[in-house]
Length: 173
Image (cartoon, rainbow, N blue to C red):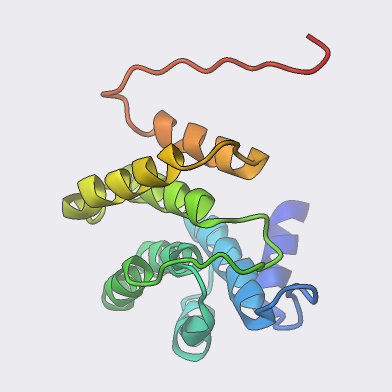
């Protein structure tokens, strides 16, 4: 219950955000959209609040991930029309390389977005394109952050048609 209360405070308090971000408005939107997504999954996200966030803050998105979280929350709470609009905007909002103080990257956000789309069976026609984009990004990387590794693992979990194996190694052996 404490976790839900904390998420409720993130959702309704516009003071949350990341002061070290190059885009604090995006950070605030990301906090609120993720909180909305989690709260909507348990039926505790007020639709009026979700609509206000969509109407007043969506323009601050510097990545599609917060918009996708907001889309899923709006749809879950009964506003399919706004959910579809937010989904369309999410798919049209690429993440740049600038620092947003969320440990994210184009690879991390792309993998999480595709995982959510697959999990919720949305925008299925875009899956091949988004998968190819991720594969291209991976092909040009020499290392992955912890966030990127976990996002790719999450993506693998929602694709039961693909056999996969994870190997965890540590410096200690």
